[in-house]
Length: 293
Image (cartoon, rainbow, N blue to C red; front, top):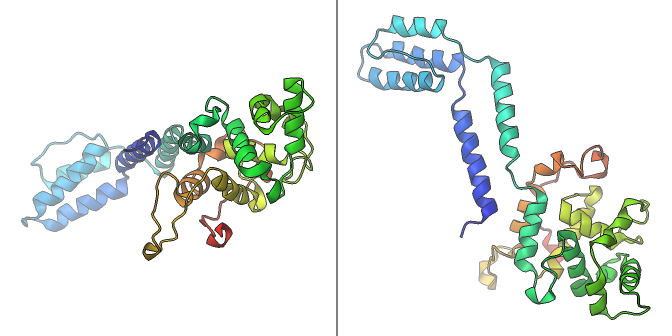
């Protein structure tokens, strides 16, 4: 079954292809006219004319069929064809209008989380970043073993919400809500580092909104995300018994769709005026399989 995101991307690509096919210059038309003249009275003149007519149709130029070469040459000389600047503007506007329909990183991430979360965890209605956070908390031990800070801040917040001095692990998951992320607004740079007071909160927020941090920190977070969501990888070794699962594959879902190929993040609110904080050009590299063992 083709997903909604895939259908949207296919539609965007098809629309762009149709748009660009309809763009031609005087040079294109003159080249077709030259082919018609070169054909003379040979049998391929008809096919050369058809190609010329196709371009005239694209450009919206009316013409009569069955006329001599001089007629078509005069028609081309008097017709208006877009210059380079007009074509450039048209292409930019076409790209802009189509990119508005292009899925953003949050939509890709939401699809992954919706697909891989367990219904029995009862947090399907929470915000995307909160669902990611709770997954890290329950199935990744707050990422403490990976050097992330945040457990104390999270448990203290839950205790305050519950108005209790002690809470079980399950109770913390119940009482933590999206308000926990408000601390990031006034947090210092040090507090938002992985090992800082709010490290886990910052990672969850970054992954949910497609904020790809510089110096490779986002890539590390993707591996940790894959672990707690039970994602799979396929090294290509068919004889090893591995199976490529498109629903859970790390390379396809995280590194290709979400991370490497997404352009919408550059025009998102999160990136506006803060480009120096984020990775501008993902290398395009996929999984380093050494990191998965």
